[in-house]
Length: 278
Image 1: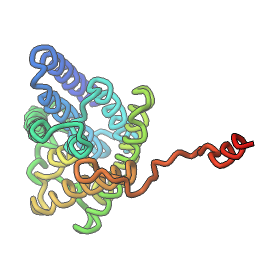
Image 2: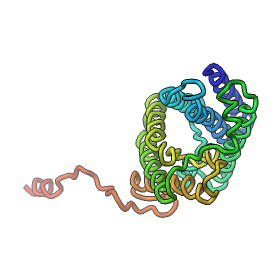
Image 3: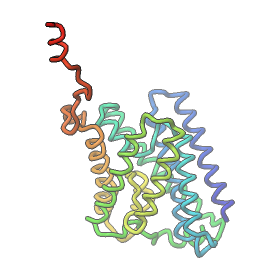
Image 4: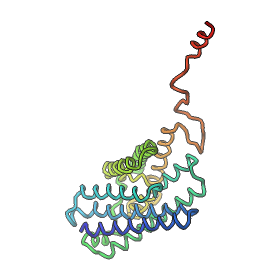
């Protein structure tokens, strides 16, 4: 059963790698389209991992350890082939808040990310309808009645996403000057841990476009409720992380409200003056 899923993962990775290469090579002004590719690849792989997590245990004897391992590896591969892009609207907004990207580019990037996530959902639905294995047959039967990831109240779910995003984006900011060899596995491990801890509440996706693909189509909650938890939650968590890390929000205000810019080491001016007089 895992062979089919692995084949699916490899196909998605190959398509995304090729698409990124073509976009970057042919149209450098269209780099925001790479975000579409990144969001598509991440959501497409996570949809299959979610299927393994929900159905694999009783359809093919695949336990939680298998789904968590697959999740960790999927995030690792995504980080390797999509260096410099995230497929995450919150990360795009962080760039805007830091004045690292303009409003137009950020808007196009976010639109591309949600488009990529939606395309991934269409691809996964088509893939499951092929019913290549029993797990996919069951998933196809349950497609209209999928299980929502939001298993908490609106307030609890929002708090979980805010806290998860705060931890994740603080880590992202802290590691941004570190080597990719360190960043990618640590962030993958953190995202896997957040998913495991938050699985009983919201699954702690901390990524609005990813959450859109994974749970917005499931019954049990309105679109507005999903948007508050999975869109506003990560945005507030990311903004708070940026403020705690920098002490300001460059797009809104430049004054550092948390940290002093004074040097730790001061020259003994008074002592030097007395020595000169002597």
